[in-house]
Amino acid sequence: MYNFGTIYETTSVEDALRLKKEHPQAHFLAGGSDILIKVREGKLAGCDVINIYNLDELRGICLEEDGSILIRPLTSFTDVAMHPIIKQYIPVLGEAVNQIGGPQVRNIGTIGGNICNGVTSADSATTLKAYDAMLEISSIDGTRILPYGQFNLGPGKVDLREGELLCGIRISKESYEKTYGHYIKYAMRRAMDIATLGCSVNVTLSEDKKTVKRLRIAFGVAAPVPIRSTTAEASANGHAVNEALLEQVSVGALADVNPRTSWRASKEFRMQLVKEMAKRATKAAIEKAGGTING
Amino acid sequence: MAKKDITCTVNGKVRTYSVDVRESLSDMLRGQAGLDSIKHGCDVGECGACTVLIDGKPFNSCIYMAIWAQGKDIVTLEGLSDTKGAISDIQQAFIDEGAVQCGFCTPGFIMASIPIISSETEASREEIRRQISGNLCRCTGYENIVNAIEKTQKKRIAEKKSK
Image (cartoon, rainbow over all chains, first blue to last red; front, side, top):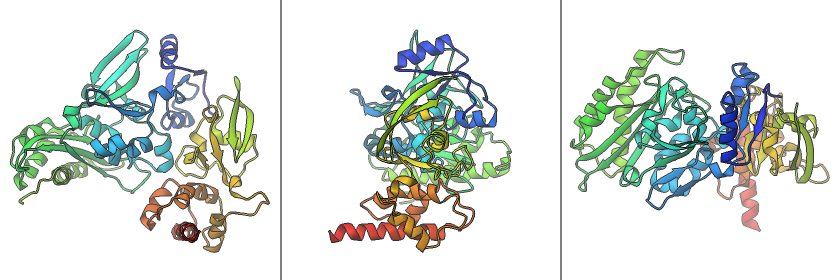
């Protein structure tokens, strides 16, 4: 038995938004793999929840007319990883969420919950940041579009205002076209573990595969929130595909990150991981894009 | 506290349970259906001892709300026996391979292994380990569990080919 206050049941998104306006203190309950644990631990004991898990209109992935990919927030990690649209256009996102927890957790956990929870270690966050995902956030009064890059306000704090619910995650065609990504999760165990550090890189190369047209790199657990390294990106764009590029990205990344010491790892160890993983993930993304380092 | 009627299929039979809306699926299946193969291990989705299949996929029933089960098809370890109560091949393989010591984790491991042994394609030992990575065993060291699952999937694939 869970120690809940009131559980509000919903039959539609509109219903959920209306309930949230009436009961701003209530938490939305999606897959529950964060909230239910916090209730068990006592941190959220007695809280009110608005159950949205059954709202199938918030589930699924589709390719829109303008070529953008729309991921609805209740899509489970398993369904993201297995979805043909993700496999074809953004395989790195599937590979990233496939490293979360174990099979049971990936079946219940939702991608929307993962980013709304607002922690820096969220495995989906780095790749979504690196692909400039746009968030569709709704309240009973309307919908606003927010770049995911502006969503995280602090550890566990996101820009969801009173009455709001994340209803869509969109990646534009321009963002994923001819773009190849790679994600590295460094953790102590191969499953059921939280990242010590996460790094997601994607690259678009010139026609001859010799020059970087665009490189985007994001880190998890390298700062209080998932971040992009703009210094690394600026130094990589237009750079020739070679060993020096990897060094530039690595140096740029170190300039932007600000990891902390926690019981999982020291700041120094995380800095070492940033340095090394930036290189390795960049190299792997370039190889996926058909480029060769020193080739 | 509010009660709600939940109708779902449990081990092939349609059942309706009157649940407290705060109950987990494991509470409902143990308390009302008497399906004691489901273990309350960690109760926070880390150990896998409460694993059941929902619409064919493994879930931790301790962090699945009973009210979400409306209309779902649920299978527990009890549902693997045939109508006469004889155990299934995967259960026999766990016995034969010594994949059971204290037995507390066993039902969860067996339910987590069902998608692997039901698949048309053979999973490598590495893939089997990945598929059972959401389940903890403190006795066996996992090796015999992987052996039992590997043996059963090979047997099933061979049976399908010979038909």
